[in-house]
Length: 333
Ligand SMILES: [Fe+2]
Image 1 (cartoon, rainbow, N blue to C red):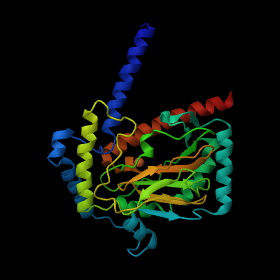
Image 2 (image 1 turned 45 degrees about the vertical axis):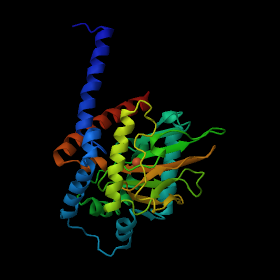
Image 3 (image 1 turned 90 degrees about the vertical axis):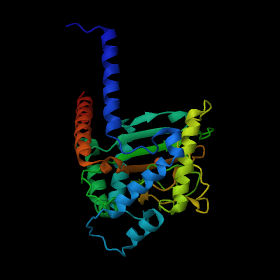
Image 4 (image 1 turned 120 degrees about the vertical axis):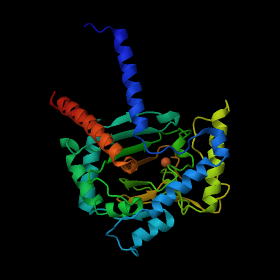
């Protein structure tokens, strides 16, 4: 059979469509669903109460003591910082590997990411790839010490095959950091969900674009529910409006929680930040000429039901194997 260029186009469109359906099936509950009318009737409030009550009732046997200061802080404030996360020699070795790999242009580079003027360098730290293997081992060995905290908050056992992603953001000189939905205050989910960052570079002033977090905004209480209600309606109101601002679709109103303080999370290099992103947060704006370097770890795909997790893990592993194979082939030539 001869495949013409036109057919190829159709095949790639079909592939995209097919994988789009799989991706949406395999993604964790959307922030809002149901449209304007159902949310006027309180759908988001019902979803929040239902999901969070189920979570509260869930039993999980943990090895962490109830009065452990890290756990207490994470539960009370929604965010915790672990300074000097790994031994200095290991951190320096990690930094060196990342710098070398970045120099070799192994990571993906996007200039003017989401029309924000910020340049993003992104890349997975592969376990099976020689160039990043050592970095993976250092990260994994140190990170596993803190995994029980995350398992305790999420009330589930998490695969020890942690996925580490490198992220560097840089705002070129004479540019202004604009747009980008991540830079507007938002929540990721309406139930406990954890993301972690490991700082690879000091982030000591607001010019360096630190992560911003509204401490205690992760707690489900009457004010949080009222806030969920108005935001679900606002979201669909904006979606209906033709002037709907697509740059910050998830930006939230703070009407009932504005007594809480939004703080820049400043930290030195080699700090682990564990954050419950059911709370309000955003990425800080970078000042011109400044950059931010970190390792990002998300556990959202781990919160899927086990059968979806199995499919998701299988697809990710397959995809990764293909990428690594390609990388190794390029390395040889
Ligand atoms: Fe977010």
